[in-house]
Length: 383
Ligand SMILES: *Cc1c(COP(=O)(O)O)cnc(C)c1O
Image 1 (cartoon, protein in one colour):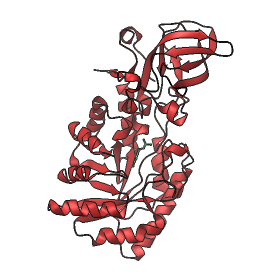
Image 2 (cartoon, helix red, strand yellow):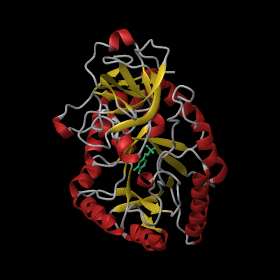
Image 3 (cartoon, helix red, strand yellow):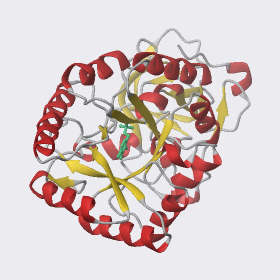
Image 4 (cartoon, helix red, strand yellow):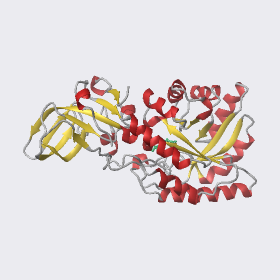
């Protein structure tokens, strides 16, 4: 459970992210213990949080890495990750980004279309290299998560549709300067129900049987990420259900001899270790609502505005025993700049610190400077 060293942090300029590195460590430890002895490899999805201190901690734990842009490849290399642990995904890789990946002999490009495959082949040829590729398949599975974070339906922009997969695999096998490694999937994010993963395993089993009947072997299967965290109860469930997650694949996915199963987890690794801490600027008692106006806004944590996400809010400095219901809003000139409606909090005053929990993933990394604001800073439980 994360505790906040109030006497230290009350002097910091707000808003800021506070990272509990012991929780991050414990999370990584639990994750690794669940895959011990299995032919499983976990890539950390940098896009969830690219803070260098966080990346360092994850690199020390020995994870591989998953990037979705050239900038993320640069960040991963700067943090000490080796090129041959990088998986590189994304529907719109530029020539420059592809060249960067090839220069660093990355583990694998997760290729999202046949035209992209041709460009990778061409760029690899000019460098006299062979690029490892996996094809990202759109398995048409509904992850039943928020529509903005569902990625595995045929209407989504991601991956190659099942109908076009045979032709794409043939192309990958025929091109001289790419090395076909296998198939990649990523069906969505913040999944707490494992049924969609079970369906994904069954889809993969069918595909493997199909390709084997055609004499095509897959060296790797990459099932992406998406394991969710408990946003409602960060202290009760600080570490996600890694065991249930990996067991689903162990039970349902028929891996072949010598085959490796790769995962790309972001949120599950860093989500619970981060908190956004803000100061209460004003408490405004209206006619129908009481508002708490804090100095953090959607520019610091956009998830509530973007996905209607809810982060548990705690007043970490109030000693009041009486509670009231508040709407918690930020200072940005947008009505969507709102953290919570009717949140029950101890009676709150100007100057109190409010903590928005479970903000380690897709928080700091999505911060922006709209309204000419400063980006939030970051502090750690250990420096
Ligand atoms: C975003 C993303 C991930 C990580 O998703 P999480 O929900 O944070 O685990 C993994 N793979 C790909 C291809 C992604 O785009």
